[in-house]
Length: 170
Image (cartoon, rainbow, N blue to C red; front, side, top):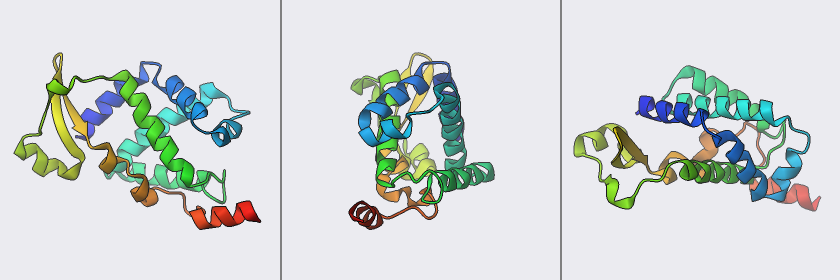
């Protein structure tokens, strides 16, 4: 499954995916727009694509992915850029919304995964489809990127929602 996800990611690199991601992200919440006020977006888009690649590596259980996600967590956490944990779900939703803009699969083309594939992939595979000459795996986004379960990759030392409320009051 890693190879399929990685190949899809590689195809997205050749599109306007990172540019569109940041357009949607900046529109999603005024706090986010303010955080990126002085950003070099050419560099930021490259960093974003590297981060997504590392997220795939992390999902595949590779040590380089774990190290990169740990580094990103520290950088974006309470001791670094201080990104509020409530914005992680906004990032994940924007990532999925952007991906949906680049690939549309008609409902009738989606079939349930065969039993053999389901056993290999666990709960993440929702279906399969054929697009032209390609076999497309349909991931269950709620299981793959679950905001409630993002504690596995949440920044170390990130403030809880209660701590954020206290900070705003205080």
